Length: 244
Image 1 (cartoon, rainbow, N blue to C red):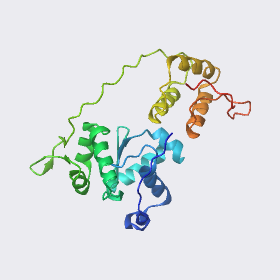
Image 2: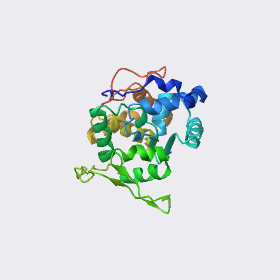
Image 3: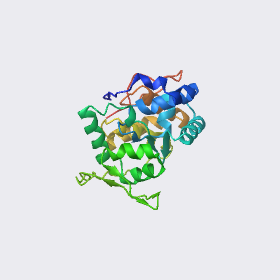
């Protein structure tokens, strides 16, 4: 997976808010700025499953941490999407390429309905920051109206290719397989072909649901492109299960 560079000021650690957070809150907060899915505009899609694999936090702990950061109006997590309200504040927006990158993300990567939600539930400072990048929300009697105007958003996206749906076999851990398919797509590797999927299923079906989850978790944690069978001791064998 190709890496991305992000400008992140060292004064972050001297921020009065950061100084008040406990270690777990600090870890999640900085992780939301710097993980591989993070965008310069602060809004991106990411499952709690991937967050848990990266940070070691359980789902319950993530819920508690998001509640704390949400109450402080620093982070919004809604319907699988993250919005870190102060991300743009920590970017070097005097750099022309950075500004263009933020504008492109707002035009192309963040769905209008997500912008509407985050602007409606964000802070006035967050809305002011986005105003600088051509995003605005009209007001009615002083209240935010969930209707967003994004300048230069008239460029049509290329239509998505239709993906053939094949029936999942009995005995497959469908939740683990969905995580693996999502991971392969989000890391910009090739989509798993039908032929490769069937060969991977054939090997996975030799294991229990828990063991299938273990195989897939290990490949995601180690940024593997393919899946690997378990050895007798529960570790993964180097012999690859078709990763195309």
